[in-house]
Amino acid sequence: MSADAIREFEAREAARSIGMDARKLGTGRAHAAHALRIEKLTRAIRQPHEPVRLLDFGCGWGEFVLMGKLLGFDSRGVDRSAPRASGAAVAVHPSLDDLPPDIRFHAITAFEVFEHLDDPAAVLEQLARRLEPGGIFVVETPDCRGVSGIRSLDDYRAVHPLEHINAFTHRTLTSFFERRGFTTMSRGVAHVTADRLRVLKDEVKAALRSDGRSTQLYFRRMQPS
Image (cartoon, rainbow, N blue to C red):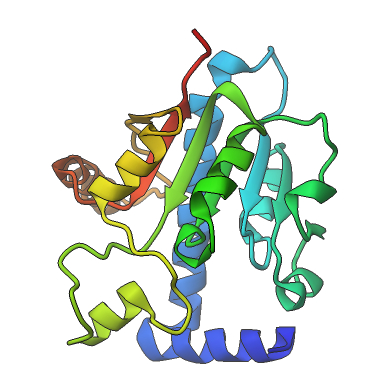
């Protein structure tokens, strides 16, 4: 699919669900919240006044990379999709091998990526070598908990048989990272709003997230012993 065809499809699907404007606002708010958390959580491993070095792996159109740049990050993106890279808002590298070999990042993000990978373990190990000790890894995948077949639209979206190779739950995603040198951490709450009701909703969501069900998780790379 060309870049224009992908954009047209995504725009049509967004318009069917919650509307394009609302979707863009929600995406922008989520990106800003992740960036604010990452800035705070990486302070201990950065020098004073050193910008956050951020890698968004599987960055798509580069929107989160751009958000990082707007906040002063040294942010870079990798995506193997040539159509998306060609239409991205920022320069996108086609693979990790195209990054400078000596650069290590304070934070790496991978939103809706690991379910697509042929060998997710090998990719995670490769990414871990690019992450500073004590660095932050933010990962998000569909939650496939309880899905044993395609009985509803939610089931289909979770396993997406035409695209998804892997299926994760909170438990399996946590185990997958912890077995490779990461430790689960609390991400905290970032309020990107002046609406008090939304602040309350965000606090409630954060409290509910502690029930061990979310597949949007923050990990820290453990320091060498």
